[in-house]
Length: 553
Image 1 (cartoon, rainbow, N blue to C red):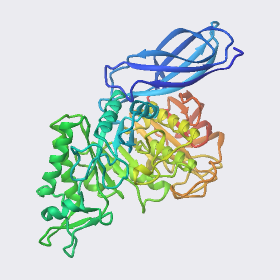
Image 2 (cartoon, rainbow, N blue to C red):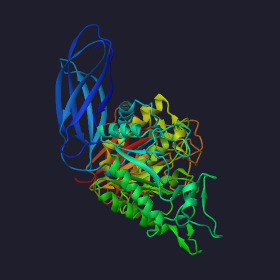
Image 3 (tube, rainbow, N blue to C red):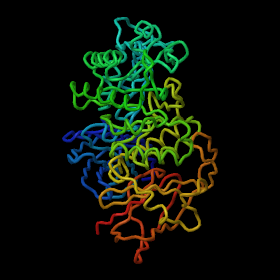
Image 4 (tube, rainbow, N blue to C red):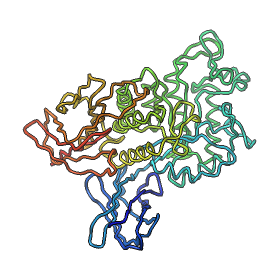
């Protein structure tokens, strides 16, 4: 076909699907045809490399933009990711335009959390559905409503509009409710931000029996003269008060659980009599009490706790929280730390999903891409996207920055990729990087675990009879800290061999895919096995390429 025809977007009506829900797929096409042209539009649904469903319809192409839709009822298996490939085909069966995407089926969003954020609750806001539509392109399935409340100790107020302690902008509960409703239209969970021990100074001074004191008997302050830290022990009057606040929120709004924050310090508290206590087990107890409360409203309501500085991960990861959420700060400054923090949390949480809050200036686009390659390739999620293509640039969420169109398209493709292949590299898979780190090699390029720069980094996940090797490209990169700008993209590789020594199984199939390609579907690649040595021909590596080995045959 001589005219220009392009599939510009594949979108879905929901961020994920529960068993038995039909998937509504909209395909947007841009064309410069001079007159109406009949073509066939074909949809292919895949599970890894296997086609599990197809559908085809006739479409009359016209000049300009147009949309057409498919409906598909996926298998009820959960959690499971699927690929969608769309082809436009001429009447003589020639494919002339293609595009790829993904969706997944989950019992609950916390099985594979793709956490985003909202910060604007102004009374005049009228773009709730539009905002969710944009976030849905990244498959965001849970949203943290950041500082939505009236006060940290009193979430709801009869005054509207109202102001929180930090923002000069007014909030409205009507806007909050409109955003919750819009999120639900796309199957996104709405999670209200709260702090386990944050209170306004005035409230704290009126309730000295609730305050957490320091070693010299003074109230523990936070944020200058704005806030104080309260006593979160299970038998504290503060804990009873805050649990009642949670109860009121869940009764009077349609929020889907509770997001719990803390500030990383103090780690030891004192009561009014000077008795000390460790906060690590106390915070785990607080999480469990909160989960017991939310279960009274709905077993699907989630509880999430922020392990600031990865503390106290040993106590909170095994708690009743639904997934492990870690805000990454020094000393976790190296790219390798992102992976190690995730793997450690997955182990401590007995396989719970993990989400990192790792803030990066989105103008550092190479950093943003490498960070997501590491985090997603390690089977975790990354809270970074929110509002309208906003990215978290720092810990105070309202100071987010809007990302470029190029980075937006890249990250949408990365999220497509992680959803499509969650079965072999997602939260339910297990890390096997240390097992393989000495046996994987690439001639001419270092894969050494002891080398921090100028290398190809294999991150390995295992699931059932699959081994997945995520190759993360640091060739030509000499920066080791994930927050420091990388001015140039990694040096690409093409048509290279990867070998795995000491192999004890027989490879039946080997596939390749990369989110750096415009199309992310798996395709078979050449390999050979000689005794315990497996040699794989890899097409290319830009930022992130994935190799899937099937040992089942």
